[in-house]
Amino acid sequence: MKSVFIVFNQANTERVEYLLDMLSIKGFTFFEDVQGRGTNGGEPRRGTHTWPEMNSAVLTVVEDSKVPELLDTIKKLDNRNTDVGVRAFVWNIEQTI
Image 1 (cartoon, one colour):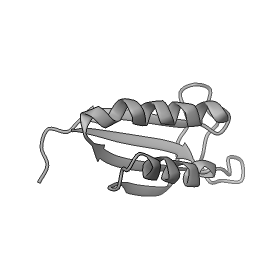
Image 2 (cartoon, helix red, strand yellow; image 1 turned 90 degrees about the horizontal axis):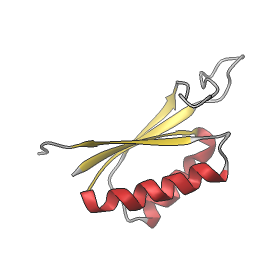
Image 3 (cartoon, rainbow, N blue to C red; image 1 turned 135 degrees about the horizontal axis):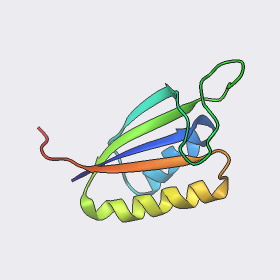
Image 4 (cartoon, helix red, strand yellow; image 1 turned 180 degrees about the vertical axis):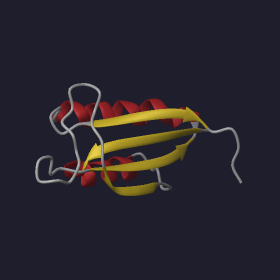
């Protein structure tokens, strides 16, 4: 199993939820008001007067076979509007209960 952490501008919230539904990914944890700055020239997302936008994030655990399709779909979303941005990070899940 793999954990996929998806960080995205809040403008993409409905799109991210839609892609999870489209890929039949039912379980996830949603984080609102995530602050940060992307490594590829990203603008800060701080929720302040100077940097008013915010990010959100989703953490999901999926079967290994689901990861390539999920990442491909996320990449397509990112390519639609690179200024808004979405990133995904994958790591192994050793155990669950």
